[in-house]
Amino acid sequence: MMDYAQMNQLLYEGKAPLILELTKQALAEGRPVKEVLENGLIAGMSVVGEDFKHNRIYVPEVLVAARAMKAGMSVLKPLLSASATTRPAGTVVIGTVKGDLHDIGKNLVGMMAEGAGFKIVDLGVDQSAEKFVAAAREHKPEILGMSALLTTTMPYMKTVITALDAAGLGHIKTCVGGAPISQTFADEIGADGYARDAAAAVALFKQFVLPPA
Ligand code: B1M
Image (spheres, rainbow, N blue to C red):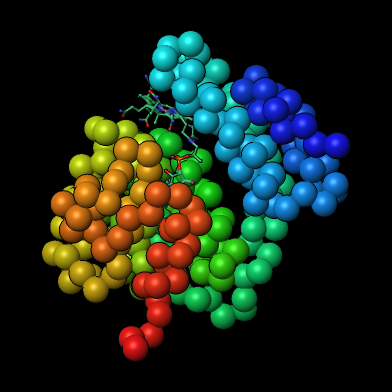
């Protein structure tokens, strides 16, 4: 019987092999993928975030916890992507903006969008406006998604939007997200949308590719 509190604690301690096993075990018990993701992995990572914020743990501990989270996500990823159709619902170029190395949330958005049938072009972390523009030219996406977890890097999202406009790619829908981002901020920088979590991001992506009524 899955004990999510124990799983959260093991994630907190960075026990990647055990998280890998427990994720598989939860699925073998018939637990829904979304439940394992939210109650087993994200809940554990939230405690890590709180303790990091209050200086109860430091970067090395956060890194090992992040590695454990990734181990669990590697099991869930194929299942989140399983419903992908052969013809993509649309293409999303996604990346974490320049100066920012956080990628767990972005990866989650990518995985869930892939599961909803989108083709994902993941640029990775620390991406410059030039890289976003080059990828937009190459892949011709309907949507360009940016993630930022630092208050110091979130303003760079506007730099990317400005560069897209300057490159004549202003028709591509931009979506921003990450812990410090809000709808107000998205409006201020001229983003087409904001999503507070991965599920909301997928809902927004679907809206973006709906044919005009
Ligand atoms: Co960092 N870090 N970190 N960190 N880290 C935060 C963000 C911080 C809030 C911690 C804190 O102080 N409480 C803080 C930022 C403070 C601020 O800016 N005001 C912080 C800091 C300060 C730093 C460093 C500067 C620490 C240092 O070196 N002194 C440093 C910066 C490095 C850099 O980027 N240049 C740093 C480093 C790291 C690690 C490398 C150790 C590690 C990252 C590992 C990795 O990502 N591979 C790390 C981590 C793990 C965190 C916390 C603890 C957890 C982030 C996370 O993965 N959350 C974080 C604390 C926190 O957020 N509470 C913290 C789980 C993830 C599922 O959630 O990313 O929010 P999230 O994604 C969500 C939504 O936001 C949304 O959907 C996701 C799923 O629901 N979303 C989108 C995300 N992107 C989206 C895009 C969309 C739509 C929705 O559309 C495209």
